Image (cartoon, rainbow, N blue to C red; front, side, top):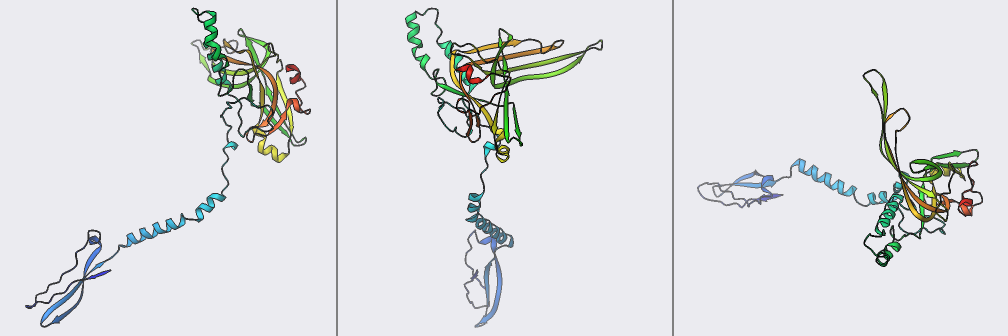
Length: 350
């Protein structure tokens, strides 16, 4: 844009040229440019003007911004809608636990179903047992009045001592047979400790927390070597009991098979889980601690803490933890097969 100066003619051949004031915004980009020179009545009149130009790099910058704005409009939103979503359940299993009584009549579980939290349940039962203990200075009436509400209060969310619980059990082995078109699932049961000694009864491990696991060799001054092992862990397990609270499970392993096409197996084999369903049974929980040398002829530390939840088992299902699809219900499926070396589960809890 060109701003023309106001021209004035004066006698004596003086040259005077005025120009419009420039705003601070325009001033750095404007230059003075000489134009035509003429004479009027003996006076020299010189025409000057101000020319404001846009610098080259500024023009390029504005052009780039404009192109970017255009490219971010309409079409990008369409691409975003058409892009398939990332499924987090294909990469990890949820730890969002159930806080409501389990519905044993359901025909499908919610996606990423994890059952109830065994560690939190154990800790809440233990805390409740401490609360309801009778104080030395309490009368029987005072004790009953104080614990009346505590006994029936929920343990987790809306579940209490009388609710049905469900616990997810991860199979130790998943093997697919293309010839039989079947997935074989199995889980090894853990021995139950009583008074620090391994008993004949077994339990389903539902959570394992390693705390220390080291092994190293120390060379003595005489050249002999000594193995040092340090191992500490906590283990939460479901101890199956009968209606009187006595442990009943003595199997070493649990196994079942599921018919599955190869395509389905590739997609969901790693998501198959057992789901143990049952009710709490008195005394509800128990605790054992084993502190000994890891193995004979070694030294070091071995500390194992076992937290048992006593459950009268109703059923054991097989389900897809990602989709929630139920693939096998023990009491409702005649095809539910078990390891030939173990007893039929349902006969133990009937």
